[in-house]
Length: 339
Ligand SMILES: [Zn+2]
Image (cartoon, rainbow, N blue to C red; front, side, top):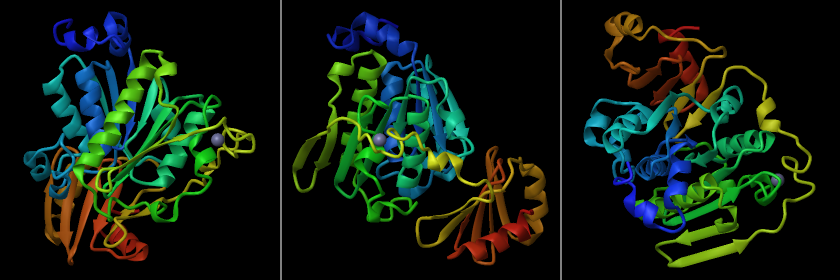
C-alpha cells in the first residue's frame, strides 16, 4: 500500500497522515459521464477508500471521445456507466470499494445518495440536478464540488454550506443555455473535461484531508480554446439566499408523480414509473420477443420496434429514442412495458 501511494505520500500536502485519511474516506460522484468518470478514476488511483457512483445511463460509442474510463467493449455491451466504472476501478485499484447506483437522481433519492459520505462531486450535465444536489447538501451541511464543461469552456466552485456561498447564492437561476436537462448537445472537447475534473479532484483531496485553507475559494473559469483562465473571488454567503440563507429546499419538496425528462433535446425521452418498482428483465425480454428486436444484459434491455429504440432498466425506467415528445414516449411505454 505504501509503495502504491509513495509519490503521493512524498508530496508534503498529503503525507502519510493524509493518505490514511483518504483511505478512510467516502466520496459520492453524481453523474458518471465525462466529468464523473474522470473523477472516479483519479480518486480511485489516489486511494479514496469508498466511491459511490451514481448514473442513470449506459455507455455509447459517442462517449468514447471524452469519457476516458470507458472502452469500445463497454459500449458494445451497453453497460451502465456505473458498472463499467466499477469494473475498471477494480482493475486499477482493487483496494477501493465501489457502490454503483443505476438510478435517475431526483428529489426522492438525492438525500439517501449523499448520506454518510465525506464529499460530493458534481459530474452532472444540467442545472436542475445541480440545484437538487445543492439543496440536499446545504440541508445536510455536506460539502460538494460543482463542475461543468461545454465546448472548450469549464467552470468549478467548491461549496461548504454556510461557510462559502452556495450554488444558489452565485446562480440564483440557471443560465438560460444550461437550464435544459440535455446531455451535451452543444459538443465538448476532452481537454476541458480533464481540467475541470482535475480541479474538482484536487479540491476533494484537500477537503478529505481537512485542509480547507488550501481550497481555491473562488469561481474558477477556464477556456482552453480562447486561452482564458479566470478566478473570481466569492464573498460571504448571501443572507437572503433562498437555500442557504432562508433554508428553503424547494427542489426536495417536488410533488411525487411520474417523472418524465426530455433527454438530449431532440430525439430521446426518459420515462420513470410513479412508484418505485422493479422490472423482471428476463420475463420482459421474453414478452417483447414477438414484437421486435430485443437484446438484454444483466442490467438493462434494448428493444427496437416501429422505428423507436427503448432501453429499459431494472428500476422500470425507460429511455426512448426516436420519440420527439413526451406523449409519444408515454404511449410506447404503456404499450410495451406496462403501467
Ligand atoms: Zn446560498
